[in-house]
Amino acid sequence: MTQTFQNLTAKQLFVFVLYGVAGWLTAALLLRVLGPTGIYEGGLRVLVYALIIPGTVPVVWLAGKLAAARPGQLYPGFALSSGIATLCDGVALAWFPTLYGASVDLHAGAGGTILWGVGVGIVLALVMDKGPSTAN
Image (tube, rainbow, N blue to C red; front, side, top):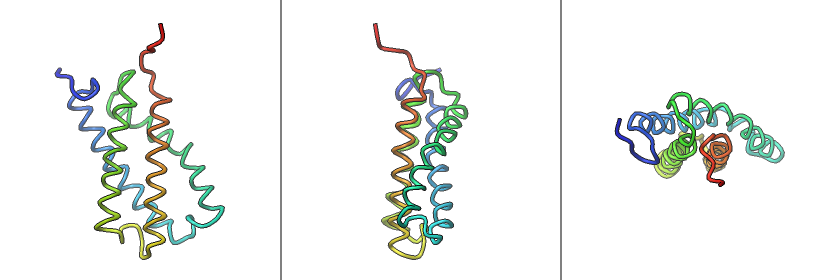
């Protein structure tokens, strides 16, 4: 089978790209529902950001399973998914902000929360990837 980006197959690339779009859309729609409850205000924002850390562990794990990622493939694959999600977030914030809610505060809250989740996911993928060690 032909190898491509960071030793990922074309099928794995497709899965990681699709996962990025689906993950972003799921998060955007969830935040649209939760945003008006005040989750971006005061201590609730801190709680939401803290809960994203353990909540993202199964998201990263599932991406690896769906893509049948071998050791060393989870991090680059999930980084690709995260990049795709970030692109979707940027397009939505610029051209379709009402996807995130009715006010600028909701747009900013959801956009920031998604960006936080993307960053958390990339770090977790790095930690969770069981790639070959480069230590001698």
